[in-house]
Image (tube, rainbow, N blue to C red; front, side, top):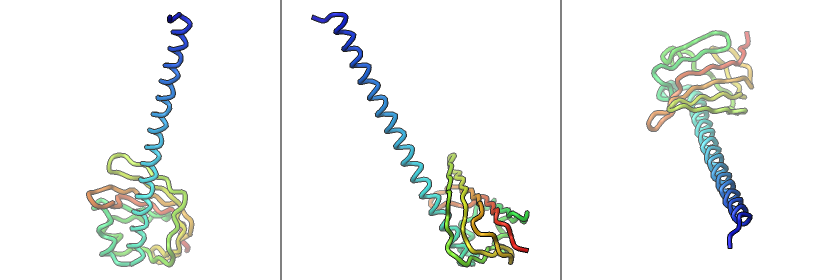
Length: 159
């Protein structure tokens, strides 16, 4: 025979089971989001490396397809370039493999924003750039490629 006391115990058990199920579902959702974030970070890191590999070649033909038509770049000294200006006269001379640290990645639709510290030996516009400087690169994901829409390089340049 079911008493009020027994029914309450049964109700508490169902409530507990419901809370456990809810907690497990919430943890699964968080794990899925972290997995997506980890995947996005890995993809963004690969895209950054691809850009720097193309830049290290010094070949504008390798860099061109990685830059969106509306590409803009600005440097710490205020120098700014659009796509054609950058390809014609401002591809950096890179002397070391880049090290990407403190990478932070956000995404909204097809736009991916990356900020990081870049440790690299390079010359920009004929001047030695400070190593281990903040960088910002904005990508647009297109079918089969990531294209750089905007870039900001905060490395101080020697005089």
